[in-house]
Image 1 (cartoon, rainbow over the protein chains, first blue to last red):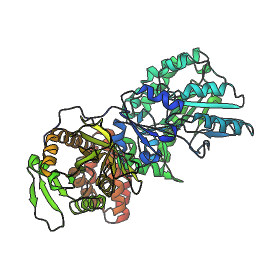
Image 2 (cartoon, rainbow over the protein chains, first blue to last red):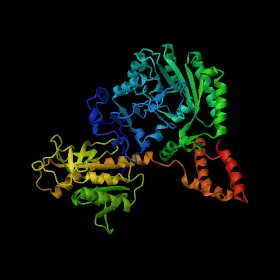
Image 3 (cartoon, each protein chain N blue to C red):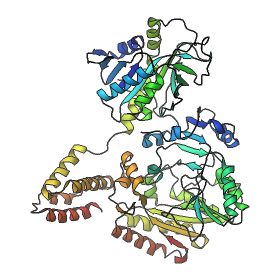
Length: 336
Length: 279
């Protein structure tokens, strides 16, 4: 067979799969307007495409498709034990989108989902209705960007801005939006909200280059954080996950200096710190597809969670925290 | 291996000629042709026949991660917006009778139009069929082929390519005309196959020098008298170290010539080696 000289890969979102039930939903229309050249394929249920057996996650990552669907059943889930609750009693998370435009080697989504394609549940009004009903019973601390990065996806679907607008008018609701984006433009037209915490995941530039593919650089993220703080957004920094790699100690120390040269610690709401950890089953699935420094590390397993061996984890946390405390008061640091 | 499945010899003929395939005298009910990394099987007409032939080929000749299966053949088009001879890549395949739907992963660029295909157990003629047709095009094999092939292969490696023959109003299929139509589409088909092969080659390669690594593991297994489960751990440790440092540590050679007297002693050496490899 002759080798093809043509370019190989279809562009991201070359195909959009749409559940017939939501073809005329307003959010569907907003999304489709952004992709006039995509091939549209009607489906009955998103799982027909998203949950097919034997999909190759690694290959799909290089030519992602969009799947537009209607969420049914549960809309809110209790916060998982592997995540920080930051002292809130009613910690929940929600998933309007499955998967992310970035591709981090350590991301648990690679082990959680059978596909790298991005599912967007367009019926955000049903999520809001469910949150309203929970708020009648008790306050709510809600993470809305665990299974994706909704701020990074704002230009595809405006859930980030819709959530901020919604949360602003709900006094007992605090939402955390976790992100790695550096695109400040999406924040510019929005009013800062007391009920919203923008939580930036930060990693050393060496770690970004090695493990956080297609994500903005550290300096770009820091620029976005500085602008957000200037404009009175509440900002959380997430040093999570800390990763073990060659010269990790030097890399992370240099990193902390760089971060706090740029960001005034007193302007930060709080900080979360944790080493890489992942449910055992997710890691097992990741290993089938991805051969890399993250998946191949000989982790220790405890209660179905894999993480670094005890001594290494302790050393990493001790070194990192003792240096972090030079910049930030202990009361602002949440460790998992 | 690239598996090509066609319903009729007239569809296969153009592929056989183009790729220089030779008849394989394999005892089976199907006509089989093979060439350089290609195997073509003529299934006969119908959803079930296509499923049986596909299963037979992938079972008999093997289905690895990089194998590709393509169903190539003629179809009828529902709408006049398509033209006779149009070559179509199917992005959705519907079994009209079971209502099961299948979706190939289209990860590569191609020069074909795309369409949804609906497979029937019987020929579909406009003047005698009064049911609803969901697909843009119809055939009698695609869904059977796809359901069978996707039991073995990843959805990006299972694809249906159909060529419009009629508009659901045909009287008789002319075999020679079918062969000519498939022949005309060969540039599209070949380009698609090549691109798919490239995708598999480029993105599904193993990054370790497996043979070299295997030798090191065997040396250590023997010198340290390691059990099977510890040897398995060792393999993971070595790969993890190579990924981080691009090579193995020089000190590893010290473990090659150790002569341990018991498994307990071997385990102690393994713990030292483990410490070295987690750094």
